[in-house]
Length: 369
Ligand SMILES: [Zn+2]
Image (cartoon, rainbow, N blue to C red; front, side):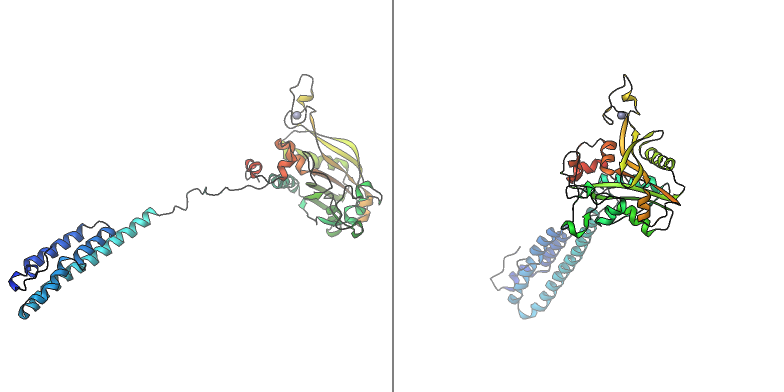
C-alpha cells in the first residue's frame, strides 16, 4: 500500500500510475477469488474496497494532479474500482448460493425417520381388556350398549327386583348424589343398562354393557370405589340356561384359550332366577395344580378353577318391569369384573397399580387392542 504523497509533484504520485492501479486491482481480484467464505469476503471487501484500501487512497490523490491529468487518472481509478466492485458482488452471490445449498443439505429433515422424542403412550389396560371382552360377545352378534353413570334409583335397584329394604340400597354401599331423597345414585353395577336396553330396543335383545361402576369401598389391594364391569343380556323367545352356558363357554374360550371348561355354582342375585357363580378352568395349569402331586399354580392358587363372575336367567319380575312378556320371552344375563379379569389374566396383584395412573404400569401393555 502506498502512503499518500505529500510532495504535490505530479511525477511523484506513484499511487495513480497505471501500473500501480493495475497491481492494486489485480491484488483485489485475486483476494476476492480466493475468499472461500462470506466472512473471508467481508475481510477482503474491507481491505480492497474500504476507505483505507489502496484504490480508495489513490483516489484521494487525484487532487494533487494537474487539472489536465485528473480526468485520465479518475477514469483509470473508476475502472479499477468498478472491476473490484463487480467481482465482489459476483463472489458474494456465489458464496451465498453455496451457503444456501449447504444449509439445505445439512438441515434436511428426514420425515420418514422413527420419531422418538416423546414417549408414545399407551391405552390403559383396563380399557383394552374391557374392549377385548366386549369384542368376544360382539363376534357372537351382541351389540355394545352404554348408560349413564349417575343413575335413577329405579333403574339401579327397583326395576332389577331389589326390594326397598335391600341392604345394598343403603349409603353403606351406595354413593347417593346429594341426599338419599334425590333418588339419584352413582350406579353400583352396569345392570341398569339392561333395563334401559329392554325399554329402548325392539326384541330380541342381545347387548353387552361395559362401563364404570361405583361402591363405597376403600381403595386397597383388591377393592376400589370405582371399578369396571362388563354385563351381558340376551332376551329372546325360548332361551334357556343351556344358552347361557354356551355363551359363557364361547367367551371363556375366545378370551383365554380353546378347550377351557366352565362350571356353575348356585348363587343368588335379585335380578336373576336361577342364579349362578361361574368358574373357568385355570388357563395356566388347566386344573393340573389341583391334582395330587401337581405343581403349584399362582394364577388359580392351585385351585384349578378361577372365579369369573355372576350370571343367571333374567328374573321374570325384571322382564315385567321392562314391559316384556315373561310368558313369551326369557333371557339370560351375566356380569364380569374387568379389574378382576385384568388381575388374573396378567398377574396384576395390586389394585393401586390400576388406578394410580403411573405410566410405568401402563406402558408394558403397549398398544394391545
Ligand atoms: Zn392354575
